Length: 607
Image (cartoon, rainbow, N blue to C red; front, side):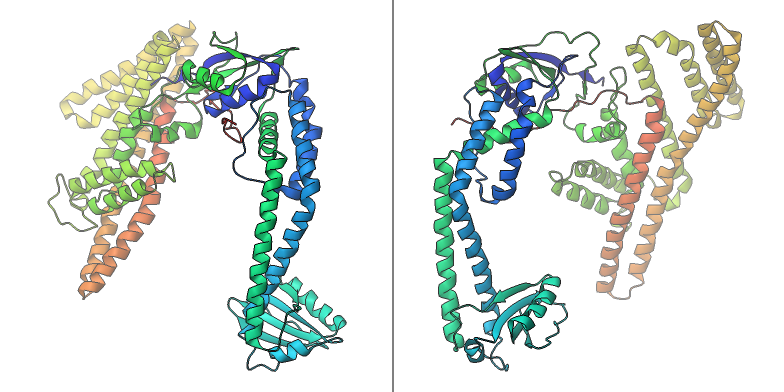
C-alpha cells in the first residue's frame, strides 16, 4: 500500500545524438526529466528559436498543403541547429516551387464553390421572372450575381437592383441583377450575414438543361485539375524530402518545449531524470534509437526528491482517482486505493440498492469504460447496487422478490444504523493507516504513547450505546483510560505538564470530529431510504396509470429519472465521505507526482 519512488537514471550520450535519445526515452511514456542542479539549456538548443520563428511563418502559410502522414525523422546524428537549418532549407525550396500550384488549387476551389452554388439554384429558376434565358442575356451594363445566405437570414434590400429570393436546400439563394454600383450594396449585406457571393459563370446558358450539363462538365474538369495539382504537390514533397524535414522540425520543437536543462560538454550530453519502468525497457528504447549512449541507474543525488508511483493491481487502479484528487500520497503515507475498491462500491450500492437499476448502471459503465476513466467506477458501483437490490428486494423499484434482509421502508432504523457501524469501521481503518504511516516514519512509539489513547477512547464511546446498562460503566472507564493515555502520553513526550493539559483540548476536538464524521455516514442510510421512497412513489404511479402501456411508460421514465438524478447525488455523497471523513484520518497527499515526458510528435521508424 506504500507508494514506491521512481528510479533515478543517467544517460551519457553523444551531443549530436541528444534529440534521438530524448525521443527514445519519451516514447516509453515512463520518463520524467530532471536536470542536476545548475544545469541550463544547452547552447545548441538556445540557438533554435530564431530558426523556429522562420518555421512558424512557413507553417502559417503552407501547413494545409503539407503531408500529414508518413513523417519519419532522420536517424543520422546531427547538431540541432544544423538539422533545423537543413529542414528549413528544404521547406523553403519546396515553397518556392509549390506557390504556383497552391494558387492554382485555391483558384480551382473558389471556382468549384461557385459552380456548386449555381447548381443549387438552377432547379428553382423555372416559374420565376428571372429564368435562365433572362440571366444569360444580361449584360454588358447589367450584371448577374448569386448570394447564398443562411436559411433564417433576412433578404437584403434591393435598392436599384432587381432581387429575387429562392428556397435552396438548407440556405436562401439571392439572385440579383443590376449595375455594378447597385450590386455592391447587396454584396455588403450578404457578406455581413456570413453568406457567399458569386459572379455569373461564363458558361451560363438560356436552357436549364444546358446549364446543368455545363456545370457538371466544369465541375468534373475542376476536380481533375485539383487531383493533378495534388499529385504534383506530392511529387514536390518527395523530391524535397518534406516528410523528413517536417518530422525533424517537429521533433526539435518538441525537445525545446519539454527540455528545461541538460548538462553538456564539447562532445557529450548528460541526460538525467526518473523512470517508472524497468531498466531493460529504457535500454531497449535507447538501443533502438541508434543514439550513441551509455545508460546506468545509480542512487539519486543527495537531496533529490523522487516522484512517487502507485502500485496497485488492475482491479484497484480505477479507485486511484480518489487519492489523486488530493494529490499524491507521500512516501510515508498509505495508498488507500485497494481499500476504496471495496468501500466505495459498498457505499454506492447501499444507497442505490436495486437489481435492475444497478445492472443498467454497470452496463453503461462497461460500454463507456474506454472513453471515460470514471465509467470503470460505475461498473463496480452498479454491480454492488444490484447485489443490494437482492438485499432489499427491489427490481426497478418493484418488490418482485423476498428481501434477503429487509425492505428499507419496513425497517428504517435498521437501514440507518448499518451504515453507522460500517462508517465507524472505515474510520478505524483510517486510524490504523495513520499508525502504519507513523511506523514508516519511525514514529510508531510516539503514536502509541498518544494517538493510541484517542483510538481507545473512540472505540469505548462507540461501544457505550451497544452495551447493556450494567456494562456501560466499563465502557466509560475505558474511555477515561483512553483520555488519560492520550494526555499523559503527550505530556511525557513534551516533558511538560502544561503540554498534557493542552492535549486534553486537542483530544476533545479530535474526538468530537471523529464522532461527527461517524454520524455523517448516516447519510448513506438516509439516501437508501430516499431511494426506496422514490421507487415506491414511481410504483404507485404506475399502478394508478389505469392501462398496462401507461404503467410501463411510467416505470421506464421513472427509473430513467432515478438513475440519472440519484446516480449523480449518490456519487457526490460517496466522494464526500471518502475525501472529507475517511482521508482526514491519515492522508495529507504531499508526495511528488510523477509527470512523464510527453510523447514525441512522431515515432522512431526505419527510414
